[in-house]
Image (cartoon, rainbow, N blue to C red; front, side):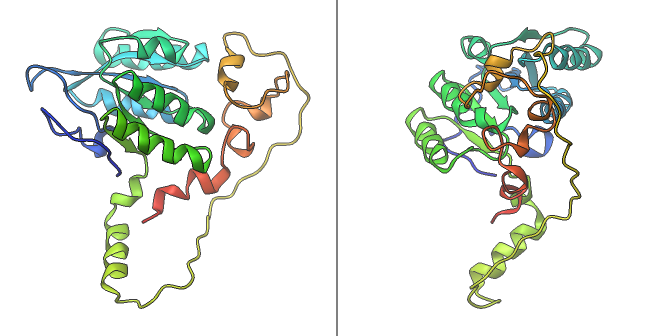
Length: 250
């Protein structure tokens, strides 16, 4: 767990519940903290469920460029709370809302840093999914922004707080295993890459132009570069090294 900035009135919400570290600005410790979840696909929908498990947080809005994702997440909130939050397509509208104290960023990788930095500029605290940055330079910009705007930022490297990783860190610092000259990592997941498919029209209910955002855009839509498979394309994701690599780093 990585944090930048200082806690003021209340301690940050525990990472175990929602992977969320936010600064409370409420007058009373009993007031709920308003959260918006930006990107409510697979990982983002999981964050919706974890936030709903807390009674000190309320979901102010859900944000996604895919209407199907929004409707699914809204139904989940409605079943748990009996009311649906505001549904937003453009994350910039989320950042304009005074009722939002913090955001969870669970978009494709190429949007992580651009959204997180804009959120800090808007006075929001941020939980940002791994990897925090799509390219190296963005990581430094995130740190600089967190300090400049005095925000709390938590990065979704959950395994860094695990017992086994903390023990490894202890062994390294105590010098028990000696000088480390080489380290190796492996990934035991079995991935089957999709067969190439023709380009198709953009699906109904998807703002694909906004989804692409800062990434290079060749003017076409291909299903293989979109939902659940974008991580294998460098313009949008970082492959397994970006998905699982940061999770276990010490």
